[in-house]
Length: 334
Image 1 (tube, helix red, strand yellow):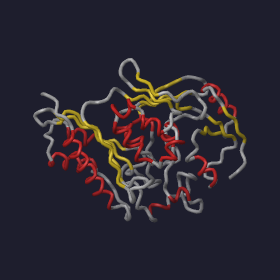
Image 2: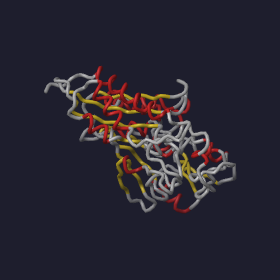
Image 3: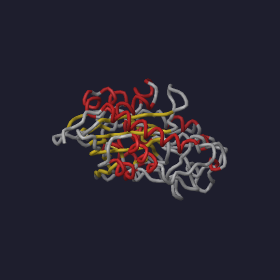
Image 4: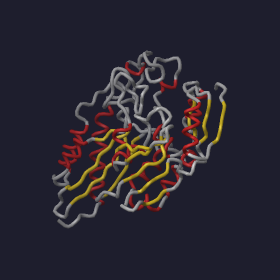
């Protein structure tokens, strides 16, 4: 690890001013990903700005029914919050599936959104990686790529995004609030926050230089049942091979009236399938509908050899999750 200077801030505007004064600086909160990357010299900040004491930990209901979650809130606190558990169980399930208890106690919401890929070539500084070093190539294309992307990838990068929480927030259509070094604020839908790799996989989000994530706002809970399912090599702490967040509302006549579908472990970003959602709405809640939606969701998927199995795994995971949610969801009167 290279040497760096350090300061702790207790005000968001002071944090933004500090990063503006140090062009090679990084914010650090829980540090559960950043410190590992610094040890490997993948991240090389010359200055760390500790934002763990910022007053951004509140989880509060807004007047119009939204839930605002501060960016410094710990993952364990969000997962255990009574409002989150009652109104957004898909988010609680995703957080509890996402890491060990020790990590959840340390990791922040903002840091979870910004964690970097767990591609082993990204972590191996001897391997070619366009995400780590633009122009170096992508060793995963012809290497060991069992855990890599099948949707939205490019010849520049086939890494996947590791966050479980972000998948649930994508299904919930959350909004991310940011504060700039000029102390202006803006909100961005989570679907616009992350970027596909294209030819610039090292640019992972649309967060501007020096911007600080201050909160995530979740709209009022959608109707229907919610479920997060994660498939991984072992049940203990592990990143997803495939995961899916599903929200499904069904009328009394067994017609699906609302559907949300988002995948994890299959793309460079949390992958929302609007095509699957469209295929579900207005259709009967039966196995043939779930199978058709699963087929549509994975259209265009490309395997690279070791990860070919993920294509069928993603179909099966969505199909089974839809059936599970439908079986436990109260039918609304039509």
